[in-house]
Image (cartoon, rainbow, N blue to C red):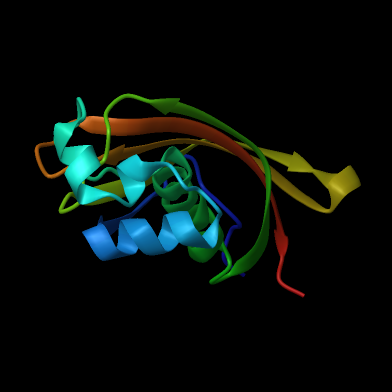
Length: 141
């Protein structure tokens, strides 16, 4: 049987954020901030154009943990800490990445506690979002 997680394990995904995907996500979560919808207003802002909401980039990064571990185990997110460094603009391509930093068996919960360090970097290799996470990972049902 494959281990649930291993220290040093790294997994990534590349995601392109179009203006349409930014608007669609903002609509889906009820975020009416015009910086995510109105190109004319956003162009006059300090950002110079449409930007993704923080919840958008954070959701993409968080979802990668579930997608990765659910291929061989059952993950449950317990804690995520997020640090936003740069706006994510329409047209940006993010490299989402997580690295397992610690694994601790937790028999009382029937699995392992797993700590991860993550980030989302844009195509200019700038950190847009840094994160840490704690997951409970158990065997698949």
